[in-house]
Length: 159
Image (tube, rainbow, N blue to C red; front, side, top):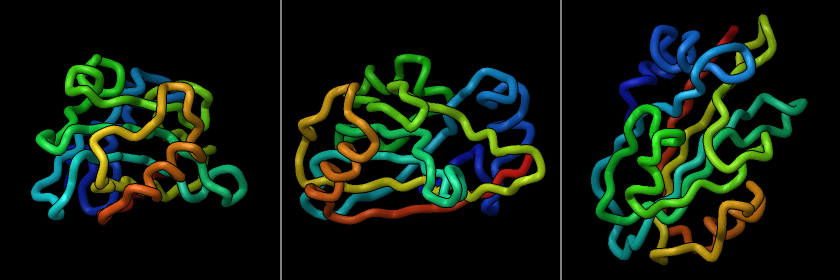
């Protein structure tokens, strides 16, 4: 799994979290490009999450949950969350910790470095029994219950 928007563990300042991409700080709140290759045997769909490990006093913060990504799909383009590209492939965005279905871009407090983990999970079912009102905890439980394997990468961002 890789992203054109995240290099060497760092969000690219002129791409993902520049003024065009940030949330709360400023900008367009564009989700990063994510690409993956291959899948474990038995994969029927994928789930993708973006999680800030440092937010909420170390309890973490879910920025993005996408479920029911068909097994034939191997990427989501930059800006997919708000462009209709997620729905176009038959996937579903559930609630994030901002209380919105879709992507909420990273924006840590000034002077803090936060660690963001992007995880792609191969699932044994084509569709999880979730809708756009599913909370991050509900989505996490459903993903865990159908998980075949997962791969993650981490990136940091400081503002």
